[in-house]
Image (cartoon, rainbow, N blue to C red; front, side):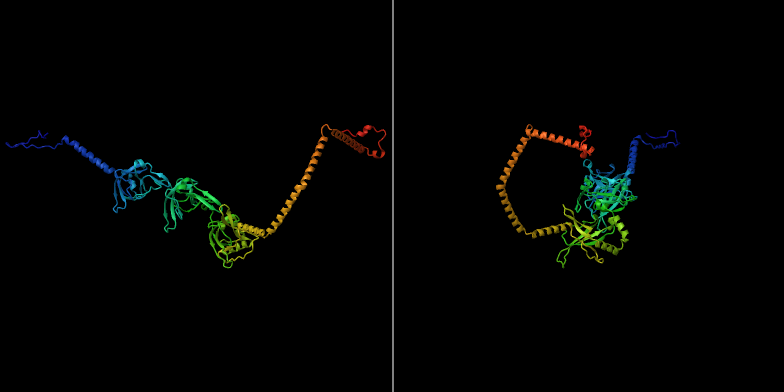
Length: 553
């Protein structure tokens, strides 16, 4: 197709050839390539516009990471893919390049977390089972920071709390971690309501800080006065009170756990704020015990063996526990040439409760006045206060210290200036029983056993002779007597037979006696009515019927 203008003519000199011009025209053949290029450019621009950010994750190893295959998931939805896996510059770790989707730009926040999801067995149970079929993938959790980042440190273990789950975090301080681990459950009234999320050593290395997370809405049960205790494994204690076996649940026996509860004496308690710090007790009993108050150290001295008494054994006053044993040491007395045992105890008068309050009020004693407190103890000692080691359990042989009043106890001198304060002691119940048994044995040993045995042997010989004489002479006579008695009984039986004359005569005699008895009774009745008959006699005109007496009713 040649473009030309047929309507335009210019005058040219004769003999000069005419000049022909061409107009620009696009052939239909070029339309398809041009459209294809435009579509390609639009796709490239759209792909560039839809492409998400690229980040780098640093892991210790590349286990489970495959370029262009391993996916990044959030709430089980794919938000990216691993594009490259390579060693770090120092060759001590692995860098995984991640291409995130456009809608996953928020995962570039500085505090976002990434970890490799694979099958794991931990304190919280078994996780990542689905990766056995689908393969490992990278889990992600969005952060809250406003700062963006390109480099992230991958976690070796999944974080226990993800996806912004509502609840509160609290810090527990303890001397040792024990069997607790990340994922260990937290119980409230034996119901799991949270878990351990982190732990670290104190700055001075003398303790451990454990961070726990309690899920909402159960976090409101953590109050300012709440007590936490270690509920791991089986709590088996053997002491003066016998055996005690406790466990929170089967899972806590295997994986450890923490339990919490507010003591019953916590009125007007309020929910605790997040990051509140608590002490982690060893067991429930010590956690829920009332406040001990200020302790007072005292010294005891025993002149007896104390096998079964251990540090931590209870100290009781009239049966109420208010202290514990803190030290047991063997001593030597040069004067007596003996080995007494010094026992140190700490008592907490506040544990006596209302009795301590009334005592302080009655004596007008100030607890801060140490000298006054010592004088008060001296008064108690003058009235018979003594310490005694008693058996708390005959099966285990455990001992405990009892403070009690013994009015008949021997008087002792009390030094109020001596520190620590010394409480006099008396032997325990078992020691007193042993002394009594020893006294009985000594008295038995003092008896003339040999002479008594000789006399007893002679008496037995005489008794044997008497028995022989009884068998030879007396027994035959006794047998004859028994034979005569048998004959007499047989004769009596024959005499009293049913048809015997003697029985008939006996019956007649009894009838006569009955009639005579009635006559005497009638005579007695007549004389009762006519006593003058004893003097005058019976009237001549008296009817014989008068002697019959009054009619019987």
